[in-house]
Image 1 (spheres, helix red, strand yellow):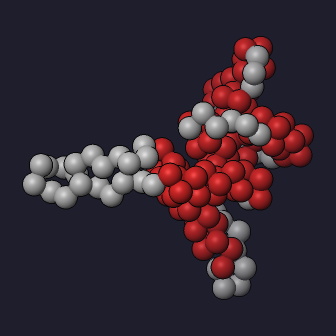
Image 2: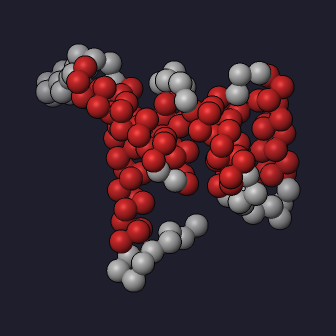
Length: 147
């Protein structure tokens, strides 16, 4: 999938930078506070510990991306928050996303993936799993690659 860019390619860089920031925020947020596991060997220095402040800043960044970003950056932020058991407003945001963008190939499969994890009832989860399954098994579906 190609990135949308302006004449100088700035949108591409912005999208990539946003995704990188989301990935970094998740890694920091997922690391235990004060975690200083040894690197690879006993002779190598320990990894730096994550402070409570840094972890909270990372979680704030993920939550802002959930609300302010668009497309797969929003999806990646939601997936990171769900992985961290911080699902507070993920369902609300993605209920609106499916209403606004539920007919957009590629992006809708990301929305469905988030809603499988965020939906409170098994019947809702099953409905999104069925959509993903249908997209995956349809060999000509534009959604197959993301299902």
